[in-house]
Image (cartoon, rainbow, N blue to C red; front, side, top):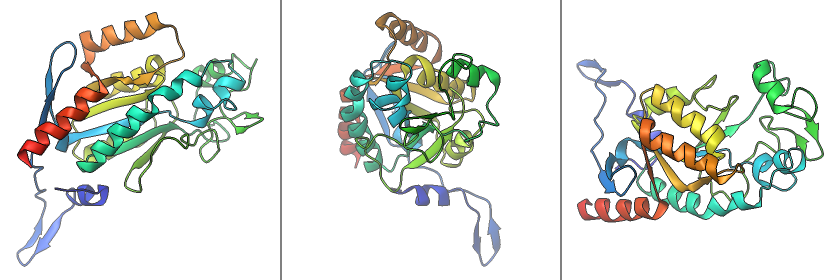
Length: 260
């Protein structure tokens, strides 16, 4: 079993022997699991799956961050999903499956952000937005405190961090190329905010051909409950499946444990 990102990446390399160069990549040994989900139970191959953790960043979750200090969002409840995200990331790492931290990380000059991002984020200049400076630092600028994952989110050396510049994590960055090189076909989605960056990324991922499973209790939002209900309805109807953390963890432990 491949247990590091480096080993997975080496699968996507040419090889040489005495007869010349081979372009044949080694196949992944399937590691299927089946778990309860909506609208019906589903089986996936963990060997071809990745866990994506979206926007668990200081500017969204910390009381000194942009969401709370500038946009007056009630961010304290958002941290409730952290233990479940950490449990999932530990389980995925244990199977050698990629864990990807997908965070906002804009240019300081926001030169690549269109008006519909810059001006919606700042209420058309009425409040500080992307790239602006507030008491805690520059808002969601790559390398800033606000763009960093909150300390309570577990990160390992083998994890991959990808910065995004849109609500969708598949726009204007390298996420798609990384996933394809790692041989990923199924993405498990966690993080905040469900109705914003999580849903936008999930939809875009489906448009790119990736299978989608949302881990319901490992994602949340500051929006009213009826908004989440609508998003869950649409995911189940149009895009993929939703499941719960415990169902997924038990499937990984039981199904893979029985075949190990």
